[in-house]
Amino acid sequence: MRLWLVVAIAAPALAGAAVAMLYLWPVDKPEPIETLAGDPGRGAYLARMSGCIACHTDTEGGGKPLAGGVKLPTDFGTFYSPNLTTDPDHGIGNWSLQDFATAVRHGISPDGEPYYPSFPYPFYGSLSDQDVADLWAAFKTVPPVAEASIPHEMSPPFNLRMGLKLWRGLFHHPNAFVPDPERGELWNRGNFIVQGPAHCGACHTPRNFLGARQAEMALHGAGKLPDGGKSPPITSDALKKQGWTVSSLQYALKTGIMPDGDVFGGSMGEVVRDGTAFLSEEDREAIATYLMDTDG
Image (tube, rainbow, N blue to C red):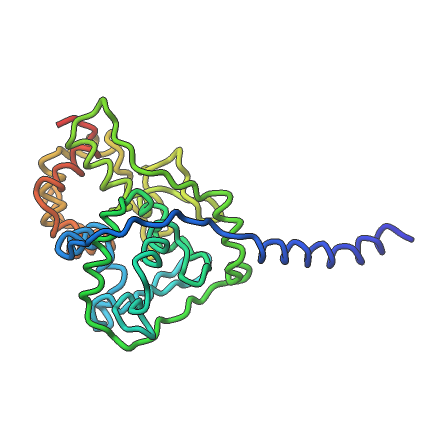
């Protein structure tokens, strides 16, 4: 039998076997979350810090809080943020604390399906059980909105969700937050916020051709953002060269006003408007301290 005929016969079978293996490949099996009483006030604060309001509220389209529908165009297709209200049919009203924890920290749905990393769950892995319980308590206070989430519009082959298992195996390596004992409390708090819930690296770190962040270029800025723009580097060297100080950065995170008197625009303007403007002065100082790499 000729080689080309062998290949022609074997290739479809091998491809089918590979697809079947990928389909059957299990995703992570997270540890059960400790059952804790949640503080909705603290949870609402963490939701602001984590960008939940900005990403899941379609303010331009007049959408209701956390009802989803925010459009996120990328090279892989267009994502739409889902409904996170307490509606039992279209939101998360029928979820349990464990469902919520598994989704937030591991990127896995209650049905066991992996979420696309447009949902920044790789950053939320640093949240403690208490953090998650507080967030859950806050989300349970959100009024239900009976609006179905808009399905993602993905380009082939990225429309095959099973392929995310391979992506996770290659790029998703969650780690709990560990403070640096040689740094001060304020610096470590900023480290937790920037590298964790605030997920600054989601926009300020370049990505490879499969959409994974390039760890060696963390916070060095990125192009091809969903709004069509690009993000500047926010490493300490870059910020200092641009004339930033801890004080001016802390002020900008509250007001959106930069040292030259201009204001943040685009997605960074939304980050301030819906997120950092609501943080405490101490937390804004912590973020600035960490980014400027000064141990306060």
